[in-house]
Image (cartoon, rainbow, N blue to C red; front, top):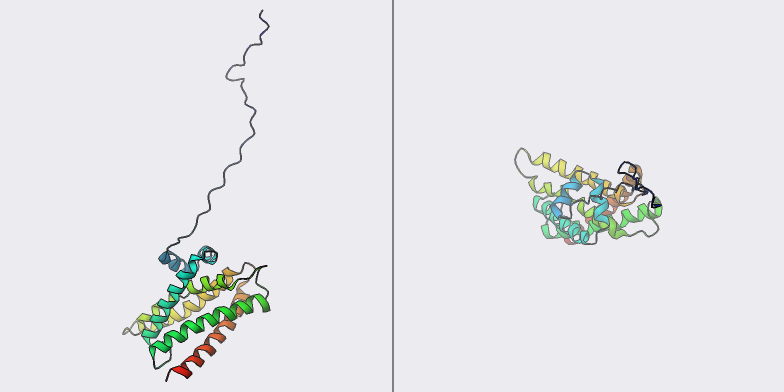
Length: 200
């Protein structure tokens, strides 16, 4: 006898290790490319809106979409103005007014903001939601022009309301509609003031 205890066999070995929790799957990010985000906005994809609202680079992308939408509306004659250049400038300024007054209505009147409300986040999502307005470029086509016009206008309103809903986490759809309505009143007033002053 050597005094040594026999080594446990393979079936007797039980490593004393705690069971490791399963790793959480990595969160999938939405596309950071402009076309991918525009497609997500058309689909009312909340993940796209929430992603772009936190992406500072998304501000530049949003302004690109606003410019494309404004050009489409001005070239198609959808915007009421004798001068397309005034129509384009008026639409862009009126869009900024929409963002500003919608943000005020959302954060001050309806209490939808967080601790640090930032209207730049709404600017990013609202700019992206202007994607359907690009359809207005085809509103003068024979036979199919009117459906393009209706689809572009209606879906732009829906997308911009969705932008409000997904920019403020505490917002409900009813509150988003109310805040968006305030923005559209401001949009109409500012655009009318610009076109009446410089459109002739």
